[in-house]
Length: 381
Ligand SMILES: NC(=O)c1ccc[n+]([C@@H]2O[C@H](COP(=O)([O-])OP(=O)(O)OC[C@H]3O[C@@H](n4cnc5c(N)ncnc54)[C@H](O)[C@@H]3O)[C@@H](O)[C@H]2O)c1
Image (cartoon, rainbow, N blue to C red; front, side, top):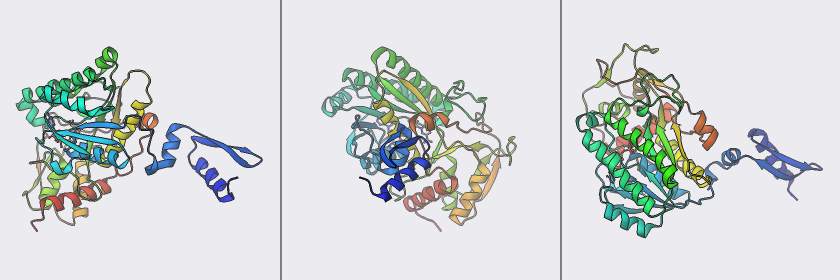
């Protein structure tokens, strides 16, 4: 017999989450019916999932996003192996067991899979600079497509059937209607985007031919850092807006260049959708759970964003408030290929995976990013 308090809590809970209800018998709960998403929401941080896919290889797990995803998986009881060549990653970011290696080395990959008995792969490893990809497309096709194929080939050989892949909104056509859905036309405008789209397409064919189940996550602008300031973005000469602002705030750069103030947006600067790296990590765990529930081979695409846009000026102003410093700014011309406005339609990931971003508001993104940035790079003031 449940206590009155427990009954009250059950009724309140199912009232709050309309995806479930309680069957009562003479006013006593007999059982509760919940859909998967509601159950997940109610459990929140305590949800551990069924973890059918327990042993996970995280390629690129010493990098910015992979390390956050790896840490979340470790915290949630998964068995994580990080595989990274440390080309842009950091040894101290790697979670779980660490293997230093390169996806170009097929023999070594084979050995790693022979010993690993993995249930799933999260594939973050890639070259990721748009500008560099224009100057050196060979590096990008080699690393993001050829080396990615090495990984898939090894997965097929070792019967590892599940993969979550890091893609990007850059694959979508520039004139996609806003908000961008997963059905938007794909038409990248740079080699980096081409390589990501090529791998998305390869995954579709591998689902049909080899039964490889995949979730493709198309990230929008990723920012923020871990709450304890131990993980975050550490790249040389960042091209992203937020670390560039903070480098000026720290006195490491003279001024920030804002590219274009004549866009057709509310303040004339470009509008972007920012997702907190911790929410992105959550999306990866949800993607794994989704794969573990699929009996047939699938290759599904999901946007991961916050679903709202902030203008460059809004981000700069909010950064000044959070850092308590003025950021010197210059206005430059628009950069070729920069879009006026882009933000995600996140209905699909919310409905199908139960994604609920917790940290993807501008204030939390900037506060966590600033705390990490200041600690990692030192303050010149
Ligand atoms: N950062 C963003 O805003 C963003 C946006 C959209 C998509 N993505 C995608 O997310 C993924 C992770 O990005 P990130 O920002 O964490 O970048 P990152 O550079 O911090 O991480 C990539 C990691 O992969 C490793 N790596 C690269 N090539 C490798 C290889 N051949 N073998 C083994 N390890 C290799 C690097 O050392 C690094 O640790 C990438 O696939 C990127 O394309 C990132």
